[in-house]
Image 1 (tube, rainbow, N blue to C red):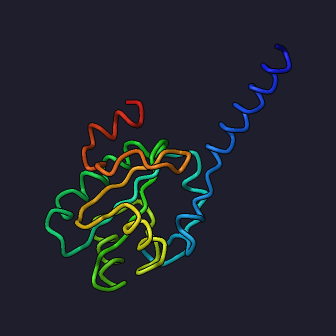
Image 2 (image 1 turned 60 degrees about the vertical axis):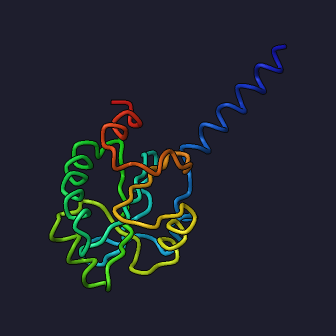
Length: 156
């Protein structure tokens, strides 16, 4: 019985450690960039709930939701990391949108394989879309635009 409990404890610890150490490089193989195009360390996502925000400068509903998300992200930056996946027409518009709306989060490089793969994998067909992933990298919801629901996911 003691050996069973010891084994169970080790398995639980290993599971918790691997969940907390999800390698976001698997989702974002080209890494992340800030609004100036400089590389952002993927470690900024470690041990946080990660929201993948699919949006674009030209999208009116996105331009309404983005300021709300900026405020929410700033208020919850200790628990939440946001990553922008742009549907803009070009890289310049993507960077302009990030600067104009003061997005405090990084983006996947414009037209990168990581952004396209996530949109395809989750069936993203419209914007704005906010996909929310747990610390273990597992999808929690495709409806992260419900900020009250997102608060609950963060335990608030």
